Image (cartoon, rainbow, N blue to C red; front, side):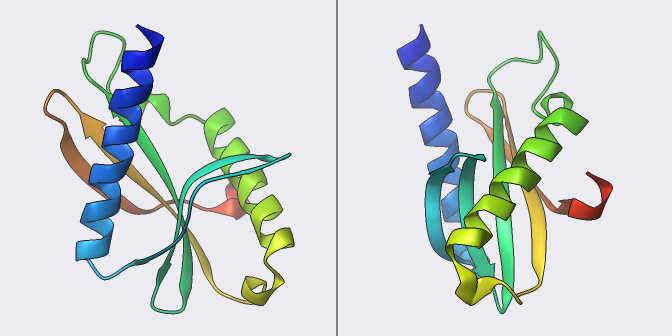
Length: 122
């Protein structure tokens, strides 16, 4: 069951990545790990650095993908982004944005939430 869950998550990330690329964003990193946490996707939208969290739920039985984005998750993503920026000083002055791509159902229906939350709030 865990392997199937990981495969669905990876497939949702790939689908989200394709959506964002079609919209003109450029991939900088995927599954970027640091001591501060993991970032699903790090992308550039023009000169704006975009940290993307992909949330996938195949069923709404325990709440949909949007319900899985809580304050704790946002803080973890902000910490991971801060860690990523520390290792990539060339982007230190770039404007940053936190987006979320929701993938609900099977096959997943995608919803892209641009500027879903702000670092200042966490």
